[in-house]
Length: 508
Image (cartoon, rainbow, N blue to C red; front, side, top):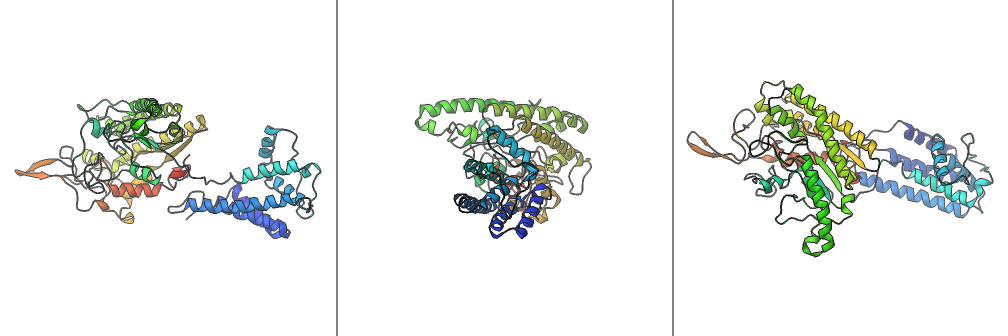
């Protein structure tokens, strides 16, 4: 259920309703307009799943348009209706609790405009007003102040119309980087949606694919992929195995990508400068590059950090030692975000890390770990939760340092964990068991991975997909199925798991 605000905005609704019952007919029209506008504006504080925020915004704007029209008509006939002066008085004093804010706004423009003092109260019936307040200039100014205030108190915003996405991350959002540099996934990867391997570590689409689709944009091509790529609406710098800090174990000798976040930022720097040059030169190649203004208008998405924790776990660090490394990891993330901001980025959509302790590759490698009610490894999830706490703190600090930018923190952890804690509720089954894998309680081991061929009792066995990936959560022991990714997107797109609680298409 949606939650009603009980702070000052809600209190104003009560005041509106009171005035509505005690006003003259003309005033009742105004009070009713205000009341309806505020109800729509303040109704949703934490949008519930499925709420049509765009519809609410349209309704609110329609009400405000009606209200604005009434005000303009009253101003036009002010000389014929002396009582109109009282209405202007009423508007200027309507928000007594915010008198100092309005006075401050007026002070920035000039002291020539007279503002009612906080001690004065409007005469709602007789309309007694000062001579100064009858000035046409003052009427217009007070109206402008009031309307600007009335139309900005709502938490709802217009669609951002992001023209592009620039993504940074690991295999959870890699759409071809790892495949271009090292080796591509083999069947059955991609079988659900693409019906063939599609450079993604899933049976189909990733969360970033659903994000792009939700914004009306095409799937992102990888910056590292030079064949048949189109960067007109953004680029993807994520690669499977990527970390925030430089990993100690790098492919081919280790299991992590050399393209950690700092290198992804450097790649973005080159991409930005070179694409602007190619655009200026024109031609076919130039037409495949983003417009210059897109770099400031785009949405910048981040989904990275899981591998930083995993590297610690698999390098014989204790849980406590991995925990101790988290602040340094998050500080490095903040540094990279600031660097990307310096290149013009202004809208940031930042995912926290998921419940790593629920994934088969953790459960099978650390079988003695304490389990929670969902069967997940508690110590490993606790590290992920601590990472998320520090990440959210970092996002708060980024907002303070860069007030002209928008930083949206998205609680991916909670959405993903719900798939393991209540799978049947969401239409899933066997959440801790890999759909594509082989061996053991979790259908996973490090040597016999999805898509490989192994010998079992002298017979070659291809490790393929489970019968119905559409009801499974985990694809290959590490990554999520398309069905899970689709569910996750459905939960986060309206802002229910975001801080601040804004929908994806309004996160600017």
